Length: 172
Length: 292
Image (cartoon, rainbow over all chains, first blue to last red; front, side, top):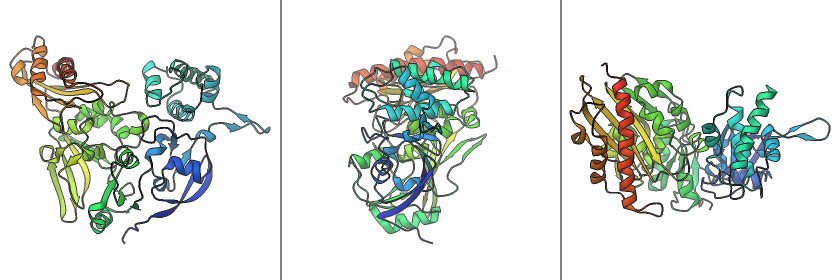
């Protein structure tokens, strides 16, 4: 069998638990597919060459730069975006993810443009570690080191990581 | 900042991949992790006619560790190699260098073999392949061949692999007995491209005297090079060897370029500093692995 060589493809994937489908030119970046084709504009597009981290989403649980992945490459994958962080409180409202709550509490955002990328990176970082283990300064730096913020100076973001980690530890 | 139009195939076997690459000709490019290739496409520094995505090719995602060394498949992500304890035992430079490759989000997607095939002088794994005396396996329609690191790197972003070909794995030989390694980088921001980086291997003899000291650098020179620093420390007891002298020797051997991030002189200075620093660390490890 010879592999088909296409200029356009229909991609089916799961985004925040919802099955979605989009027909896209194969050059479509995942970041643009989420925003333009699926209407999920929470994922922000900054540098578009993998440096700023604003477009970070989770693909099968791991944070990746959505500007450095083609939409056709996530066929069959589970994608989680910032829209998928909060959960329904079943009373008509939503409960923020501990990382979102910590960002609000610690004033870890100003203009908010970079925030979705930070939230996804940190949420994955904290969810994928043993919540009972002491969070080291090195871990915090590793979690935020790949994302650029031009407003806050990072101190409050790092504070929010520790705050969220403590909240997640208490919730265990 | 969008890639120009191309066509895309995601073959389900190596044979299929080579078939598509042959059929599409010169304009075809292999896509693995894409963490270097996609920025090049978005910045329109590259505009391949066809991308052949090997992510769905089975059998390329294994790390095979034996006494002789570590073979890393083309789809092994940096993050996976970083966590491989068996690989780190046989060749500690792998985890040490991989920890310096970009940020977690990049390491989750980028592949070690792709980084080598990309041949960026700022990449870590090219120099590690050189320093360990490694090789890559290249599949072509004519068969499979092994290419040693000396024959692989031609220039910045250029290797000797041409035509319809897929680099299917990289092999990193094991760390020899009575040896230690270290790896360090200077970068403006943790995880950024290094202004300068150094990886070293120190080997002792049975009397704990230095028998070999070698180094390879990151962001220094156009292709990976291994510099033999043994003459500065040969035969000296490990505890009192002249590591500063080895650093000074290293500064005379390298030929760094200047760019917006650093002058050539500053890079040469960093080579000296990092060489001394890493040699001391590697020597301590080698001493720990050598019975007194």
